[in-house]
Image (cartoon, rainbow, N blue to C red; front, side):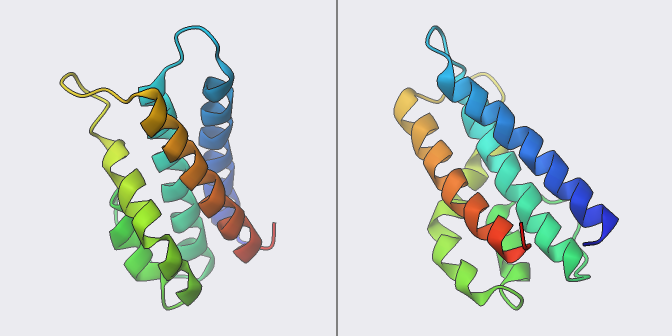
Amino acid sequence: MKPMTAEWIAKAEGDFAMMERECQVQEDPNYDGICFHAQQCAEKYLKARLCEADVSFGKIHDLVALLEQVLSIEPEWETFREDLAYLSDFSVSFRYPGESADRESAFDAHRRCRVFRDAARKALGL
């Protein structure tokens, strides 16, 4: 595995750990944070896969756009399009006043992230 791929994976796992911990909080969980870190984890795994395949990408947070780039390498990831589109909105939407995540959306984001993460880790031989 390329060193930069390993760095992307480490960053993704950091976001995954933050999401997992916040999902365990009983009093005043940060649903916005769960959604944000779910999106970030998926984004970094997409970038890790692209990096490992020597496919360049820009500073982009749109998960569907990243998916489009990775499909030539991982065509079966097309099945994640809906989940990645759902998660993609969380890169910005809940980070600022005006919108907030609720328990249902946070745990849905958590579930979608976990499923995608499992596939990404398998594809990367982890």
